[in-house]
Image (cartoon, rainbow, N blue to C red; front, side, top):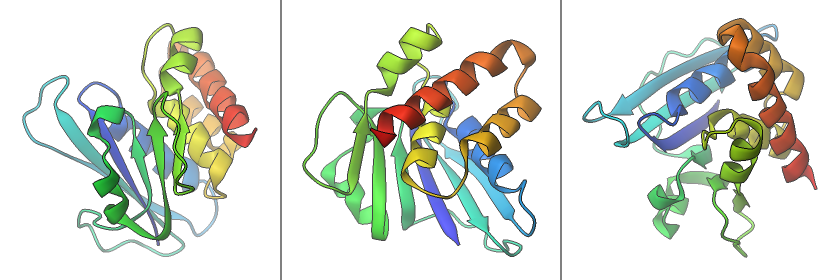
Amino acid sequence: MTEILWHGRGGQGAFTAARLLGEAFSVKDNSYALAFPSFGPERRGAPIRAFTKLDDKPIGNRSEITKADYSIFLDDTLFSEQSLFELKEGGKVLLNTKKKFDNPRIIALDGNSIAQRLLGLPITNTIFLGVLAGVSEIVSIDEISLAITQSMPQRLREKNIAVVRAAYEEVRK
């Protein structure tokens, strides 16, 4: 099972990204996904976590993820070096930040700049779907685009697909 842990703040769309990833993954035959959130006070800006579990067989374990293959941070203020302990061996952190890291387990990208340029808002959830597609073989850009097309309102589709592709290209450089 592949497990992805999402860290964000209320209003940043971490759960939406977790759910879209599950939808993108499950378009393939014999592919199963489970996505769910975990948050405290339901208010904009409060730290939240969301989880995506992906497997080639039905997923019975509905517990929160404690060790992830990928830990995605939509807000770099939620990241610390301690976050590396929530990774499985070989796991990676995907981090929305302007900072640079020498650690090969941390993949940093300034998603806010991409979002501001293409969306006009600093919302990076779908950007990090593109980053995940660029650094793994979990889902393809086409599968993510299909999930966006099937799940998002029409007025949001084109721009979100554009940011996914931009992030994918940026991380592949």
